[in-house]
Amino acid sequence: MKKTIGNILRFSFFLGLGLFFIWLFMRNLSAEQKHEIFESLKIANYWWIVVAVFLGILSHISRAMRWKILLEPLGYTPRTSNVFMAVMIGYLANLALPRLGEVSRCGILTRYEKIPFNKSFGTVITERAFDMLSFILLFFVLVITMSGKLHFYIEEKIYAPLQSKFNFSGDPDFSIILALAAIAAAVIIVTIIIYKKFRHTAIYKKFYNLLHGLLEGIRSLTRIKKPFQFIAHTIFIWFMYLLMAYVVFFSLEDTSNLGLDAGMAVLIFGSIGIMIVQGGIGIYPAIVAETLFIYSIASTTGYALGWLIWASQTVMILIAGVFSLLLLPLLNKTTHDKTGSPAEENTQS
Image: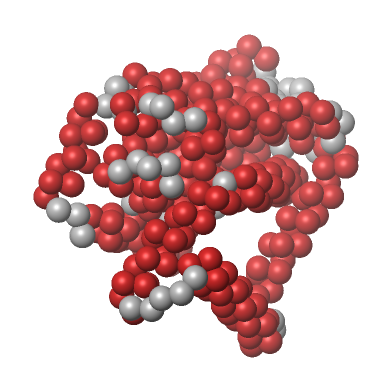
């Protein structure tokens, strides 16, 4: 009962947080701007959403095949269909509660492929560690390559409002550098205080163990039998993620001329929103709008596009996840009837 109540509260919290971000973005818009957003959603070419869903499915097929590579050194060769459906059910579960998906997909392999939960969960940690490493690398590459555009954004969105509000003057470049230095110093000071105050608490130890688990996951990559295939799948997955966001640009006339660099910016900064709020509801479109401001796209158009991209990703997960839930027991029952065993090839444990 306590666990159920806790899950309901967590779901309600993230849903409420998403609704708060929707309100936060919409509250200062005029009736005309709100009309522009809804008009953009009305005239959008939704066939590009279909293309984005297809690309998303391809990325998750590749993810399933990459997961199989991680399971092979442990002596398991599960069916690709089962691994793919486990991945999609996991994403479906993650829409409701964070980290529930990782538990769900490992539980599916335990049930249908007889792979011990702790062993499959260890490979998920490895997978997440490598994805996080890839994300951090792409983030820094993006920041370096678009430093000029970020400078423009900071000057327009941060420096100019502060200047008008507090009526101060001076060199914008120096003020921006000073502000960034102050933020960096504050982060360092807060980090030191948190470390000294909370290093003996359960919360600190939980985060420390999580970081330790990520490092262990990265080290375990040395045991992979097919490292080049693993890296190739990783590159393909992220490229499909990029295309999945980018093709939606063509659904609106105002964003159809943007390049892949804008798609990469939306992918990386939008991913941060998904990390902050479960499923990215509410915050993802707002981040897309702010990101595309750098590329001279009106905030109303960027916000509408953000909802279109978010919808394409969510629809893909809902469709594939629900179908996987329905097909998984049916297909494995058929296999069981033919072979007499749901996972005959997995004899090691």
